Each structure stands twice: as C-alpha cells, then as structure tokens.
Image (cartoon, rainbow, N blue to C red; front, side, top):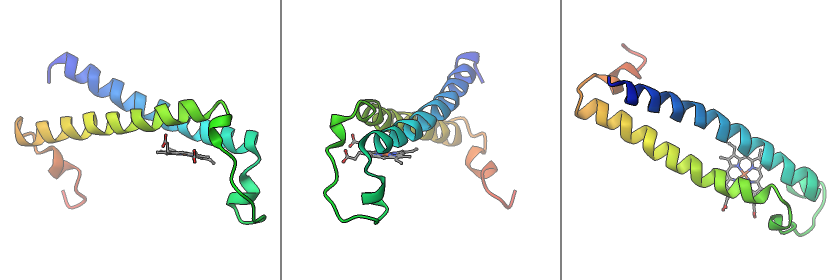
Length: 97
Ligand code: HEM
C-alpha cells in the first residue's frame, strides 16, 4: 500500500476517535448547560429547550456531518481495496476466517 494511503487510513481512524469523543462531550455539554436531562429521561413533562441557544450545539452539528464524511471515506476506501485491489479485506472482517 502506498504510504499516502497508509497515512490517510491512520488519519481517518484517529479523526473517528476525536470526532466521536467530541460528539459525546458536546452532547453532554448541551444537556448540562440546558438542564434538559430530567425532561429527556422522563422525570418531568416539559417542552425541550432550543439547543441552538447553547454553544456546544454548533460543534455537535459540525461533528455529525464530519462523521458522515469520515464514514463515506472509510467505507469507500474499504470497498476500493476489496473490489479493485483484491486484498480480501471484507473477508478478513468476517468471524469465520
Ligand atoms: C457519538 C455520539 C453522538 C452522535 C453520533 C450524535 C449524533 C447527533 C446528530 C446527528 C444530531 C443532529 C445534528 C443536526 O441535525 O445538526 C444530534 C443532536 C443532538 N444530540 Fe447528539 N450525538 C451523539 C452524542 C450525544 C450525547 C452523548 C448527547 C447527550 C447526552 C447528545 C445530545 C444531543 C442533543 C441535545 C442534540 C440536539 C437536538 C436538537 O437540536 O433538537 N448527543 N446528535
């Protein structure tokens, strides 16, 4: 595999971790700042706040789109390697092998 592909694969995997951790942190941040936890978890019947009033909503929305982009890159690269490079990559993901 060319080194740029190896570096890209490492970067995409690293970014997956960063974005998923960022989504968790910004999601929890929205909940803490807005105090919406008891509404969502059923303790109170009330209208949910507008989460856009809270700062973490912006990175949460960007992170959601970044995850879709990373997923497309990741799955696209895996399919490319399976069908064009014939490395048996999809087969290696299976338990039976
Ligand atoms: C990997 C983890 C997560 C993923 C993939 C995820 C995904 C999403 C997506 C796709 C949206 C809609 C974004 C948009 O339309 O712009 C969203 C909104 C939201 N998420 Fe998450 N989320 C994650 C973690 C969390 C956590 C841990 C919490 C809170 C405990 C949370 C709370 C929220 C809230 C409050 C909204 C805003 C809803 C609104 O504006 O009406 N998320 N999330």
